[in-house]
Image (spheres, rainbow, N blue to C red):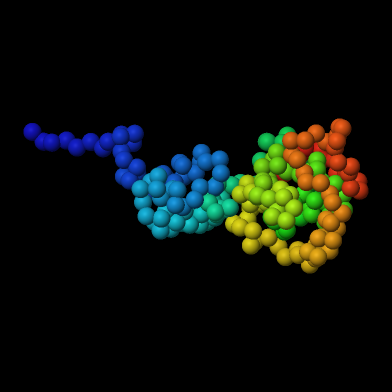
Length: 227
C-alpha cells in the first residue's frame, strides 16, 4: 500500500513555510501605515536582509510590469501606492470631482513647522506674520503635526511633523525636504519677533471667548480641508 502525501492547507502552514513574496504582498495589502523591514521580518520569521531584498525585487517587478500601483519605501517603511500617472482615475473614483487639499495658509504653516521643528506656535506666527491658532489646530487634528515637548526657556509647547506627514509627502525622512531655508527668516530675527510675547497655543482652547489672547496681525482661518 503506497503512502500518500498531501500538502497542508495554507491555514495550517507555519509563517516560515509561506512563499515570501506572496506573503509580503498579502500583508502590505492591509497595512494602514508603512511597514518596517524589522517588523515584517519578525512577523514572517525571516532575516531582515531577506525581507529587504524581496521587497526591492517586488518593487522592481511592478515597475517592469507597468502595474497601476507601486511599492515604495516611505517614512521608514514599505507600502503600496497608486502610480502617479494613474492618479487622475483614482481621484475621480475617490473624490468624485471634489478637491480635498489644505488651504494655502495651512500649507505655509506646515512648511514652517517642517523646516524649523521643533518650533513653538508663537515662532510659527512670527515667521508668517499672522496668528496661526486655527491652522495649527487643523494640522494637529489631521495628524500632520504633533507636540514635541516644551521650550526650556519659556515653557511654550513645541511642535514637529509626524510620520504621517512624511508618508503624505512621499519622503523617506526630513533630510529629503528641498532646500528652502534661505527663504525663511534667520533665527535671530524670529527670536526678536517672539519677544513681543505671543501667548502659547492651547489646542483645546476655543478660538474666541473671554480671556482669549488677542490675535497678532490677521488671524488665519482654515477651511478644514485635508491634504
